[in-house]
Length: 278
Image 1 (cartoon, one colour):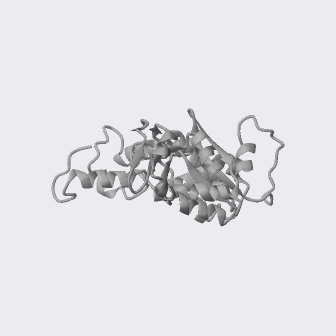
Image 2 (tube, helix red, strand yellow):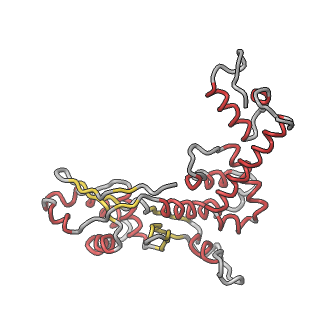
Image 3 (cartoon, helix red, strand yellow):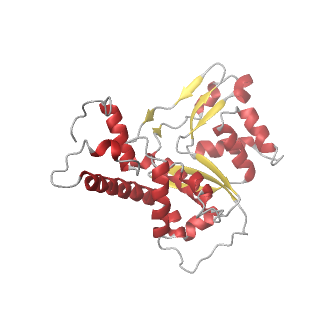
């Protein structure tokens, strides 16, 4: 591309903005004159660049949402991805960070709106993607709990591992996900009337995994993830199951290595974080 002159666009930043818009299907008018074709029509050169961008982003979405691709067919997914990319261009350079809004997009996309379970399947796949790329954090040493004054235990706020997310669905998305994995029984089916699921997604060593949890456990861990203190989290869990045992629930979190920090009115413990590369 040539540098801009005159009054067409006042800065290189505006040129970059207009060129990015053209690559995502916007107007080419403001940038065609700034492109040296080198024997190729400028509009055709933009078309080549645009094809590369859409292909790369579609492949990134396919890698993040393989079960969604399988459920709707790759051709339909490519059509949906084309529309998604135009409406939700990437905001950063890391491709694994692209696609967070796809579930909400599918929920309102006219061609897939009738597949009511599809957005939650996408949310599960996005949570798995997030768990895989979450920061590495040193887990909580249980001895730190003994350091908190007894009268502050109820006000302690625990920090869950950054790979942890909790997902509740009215649909059996855990079973839908499993029967659509490579090597699964090709004759396996899932009844959408089987009920919903409460799921916890997290990273186990170098793999992103999920498991079904009881409703009271889900309520307890969701409350902690929402930054409620222990007393409030226990109360939330007991609203779903009056016999909820906080001691067992806390021991399970510690045994699973899913606590990485704790804050009370007088003390703070936080594990060291390491950002994973793109």
